Each structure stands twice: as C-alpha cells, then as structure tokens.
Length: 318
Image (cartoon, rainbow, N blue to C red; front, side):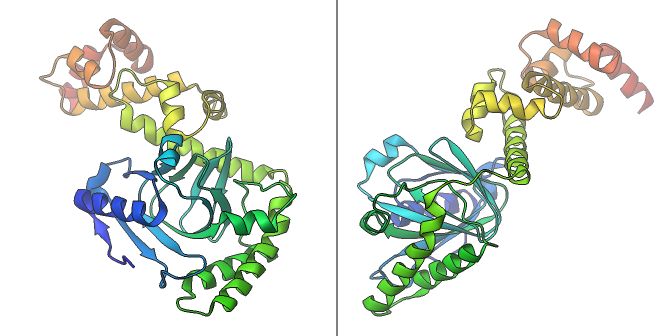
C-alpha cells in the first residue's frame, strides 16, 4: 500500500510509477496551469494482495489520464475496472462516448480498449479490478455497455457503490465471503449494463460545459503557440473537432475568434504594463501572432487604435 502524498516534479514521477504498478500502462498529464511543479497525488492499494477484486484509490490533481492502443499492447492485463468517483469530478471517454462522473458515480471500464479521463482540480477515484471471466460469465448474451454512468443517487447505484467499497476494504476476508459480495455486486449491475438510457438535457449541458472549460484551459496553455489549431485542442480535450466547434458556437463565438480575442487581450496587457521598451512586433510574436500586419489590423478593430497608440495612451495616463 502506498499512502504517501507525492508532490512536485519528483513526486509526479514517483506517483506515475505507482500508477503503472497498480493499474497498468496508463499515462498521466500534470496540472495544466503550472505543470508538474504543482502536482499532488497519492495511490492507496487494496489492503490484501490476495483480495478477490484488488484495486486502488487514485488521488491526484492531474488533468488527463489516458490509455491508448500502444499502451494496451504493452501489457497483458485482461480485466474490467469498476471506477467510482469518490471525490471531485471527471469526464471518462471510451467507445466514442463521454461520461461525466460526479461524487460516488460509477462506470465500467474495459482495459483492453483505449480510454481517457479528464479532471478539473483534485480527484479521488476508486478503481476495482474485476476479472473478465466474472463479467462475461454473468452477462452472457447481454451487451456489456461501457462508458455508462451508474448514478450515485439511484437505488442500485448506492448499493453498488457500497459493495465496491466493501470489496476494496475486505482485506483478508474468506474467499466465500468475497465471492458472495462480488456476485451481489454483479447482479445489481445487470440492469445498468443492459441498455443505455437517453441522456437528460441537464446532464448533456453539464458534460458540454465541462468540456468547454477544458478546451479554454487548453487554449490558455497553448496561446503562445502559433501552430495552435482546433484539431490540437480537440485531441487534448478528448472530443471531435466538430463537437469542439459546437461548444464554442453555443457561446456565440468560434474557436478562431476566441483564440484571437485572448491573444489580443494578452498583448494589450503587455503593452500597458511592461511593453514600453519592447517592440510591438515582439509583443505580437510572444503571443502567437506570425503576421504583424494582421496583428495590427486586428488590434485596431478590437481596441479602436493601433498598438503603438494604445501603448502611448496607457503610459501617458498611468
């Protein structure tokens, strides 16, 4: 059991190693804002290595944890994870779908398929290993739905969550007791994996809002990169370019317009606060503009004056 809180860049590397040992080949990305220097995280393993369904508590402020096809080929793990969001919230992506997980919600994850988790802030997830043979023998002739949220506040969800935690904490319990608890858990899960109910309007709004927030954070991180593109943002956020365009259209803007506005605002701040002795072209290049003429025209359209006039006026009256 690793119950140590890891911090900073070295802690991030140590935590990554524990993640690999506990869960397989998953890749983690540190917090977006200031990288691994602000990382905090811990991994708590099952009390017993002989538990029927071992698992781990994955605690961190990573913004993205993912497992791609190359990672699947790298190890021979063959099981499902029942993931329970203990604290915080996250978005899970698998089988071309997205699931928003709130506190105590659960979802079934197949480690033989690529998946992505996106988080905002500190997250705590319980990941319980369920051998594939148990899942497939009990759900025979029944489609196993992945990426389907089992709601914490539903009657079945609360019971499944309670049993998942009991199986994680069971320690050196007798095998017969563990098997009975696992049978009960899988029986309760059957209605949740039989068919996929339509998403409610509020749930769709919450999921899209979280994805839009992640896209904006990604843009802030890459704002100085003049190669920033919708496909780059969509790849980092874990959605399609088409859906990304829809997200910004819901705010009455476009991705290109939003990026341009943010770059112009950053340039204006630099010209106002610290650009008195820096060339206007340098300020533009610093924030991802590759064409100074285009920058000047866009700046004047946005602020009603050229960058030089803006700087002179701000320094004169400051």
